[in-house]
Every structure is written in C-alpha cells, then in structure tokens.
Image (cartoon, rainbow, N blue to C red; front, side, top):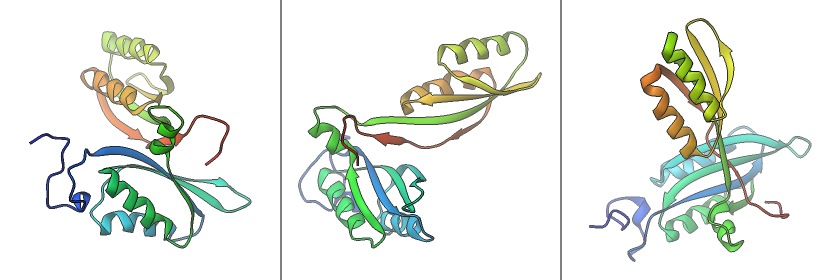
Length: 190
C-alpha cells in the first residue's frame, strides 16, 4: 500500500475516497482569554487529529487578540473539516489555511520559520567544530561557559532538523524549539 494513501481506523480517514495526506499550516485569530487554547486543542484531541506544531501569542494587544498557528496533517477533506469545526468555536474570529492560500497565490508554501535553542557541551576540537558549524548555519551564541554553548538558530524546520542532527555527535544535550510561525507572502493580511 502506498504510504501516501489513506489507511483505515483513524479520524484522519473519514472520507471514503483515497486521497493523499498533506501537511497544512492553519492560522487562527482568537480572543485572548482563558480557555480558548484548550477549546482549540480539545477539538483536535477529541477527534483524533494530530498537531505537529503549535504556537500561540497575543498579536493585537489593544483588541486582545491572539494568533494560533497549527501545523497538522490529513486528507484535503479532513483538513477542510478541521477548518470548518474551528470556525464554529465561539471566540474564533478567523481561520486561514495558509497552505491553501499560498497555492492560490501561486506559491508552494507560506513563509514558515522556527526558532530553536540548542545546548552543546564540548572541549578542544569539538568546541571549535561546534562554533564553525554554528557560524555556517548562522546560529548565534547566546550563552557560553568553558564547558558549553547555548546556540540560537532561526529558519525553516528542515534547517533546524539538520542543525540538530549535526550537533548530536558534537555533544548536543538539550534542544528547545518554538514551533512554526507562518505568514503568507503578499500585501494582504490574514
């Protein structure tokens, strides 16, 4: 069976047709009030949908609005169901599938970035190699002692994945990632 076709037994595959599973980035504008995030997350967990990345921050302080960015996977039908269900949650003002919007604009994906803090221990040659590779990846040293570095790296998730993999043999001991922040190109807002 092709890995991109639907297996059965999950809420991801309610649709009877055989469709490819896609990764989509959703941007959700909500009231910044207690319980809103729990309701949005509850929608996903209650229906068996997985969240691959989640970021939340207040974006309009005066209006008390927050933006939730979620990366999830499913068939086009399931992704449309998720969007429709999110739009029915009371404090949700707007839901935009940034992946669909990017395609409408003739682009492959929206602009997506992630930040990671990476702690690496090491001495001597390993320490020098860590700094050399950090420079090659445009990572910044945000903390350093004689036995460790904490590096900050920003970029696409694939770049961060690659950096983390390269740091493992050099003494990687801890990683903290923010999750994806995303926005479409062009003059229009969300």
